Image 1 (tube, rainbow, N blue to C red):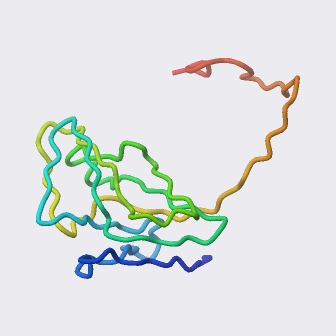
Image 2 (cartoon, rainbow, N blue to C red):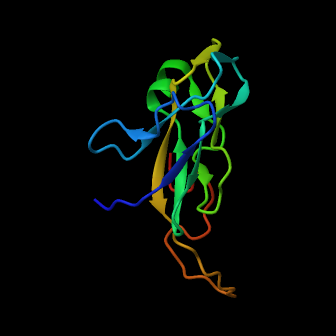
Length: 149
């Protein structure tokens, strides 16, 4: 398994929060923890930006994808609005998670709760080539639902 170095800088006042970390040997995503003062409520249908309490530096050619935690999704209807969120290699700002409550009850986030997961991926850049024709496929230009239910 390939490993790369990702530099993390804690936000001042977040020394008590765990750094992003893998929770098992074969986890692909690192858990990210909530930087809230004591607690924050997300009402049903509400969107809220929650700080993760850190800044980071990814190597060129990589991105971080921020994804929902499946346990929060199934138990409470908590997801990420722009899932997966993308953090580019040249971003150095505070990492924040845009959460939404799809559930029926208010969801309370306490300090250091695990609120998302971060997956580091290689990036491939496309070279766009304008063309008058495209290759044919069986599906061709069939729209949504074209291949069946």
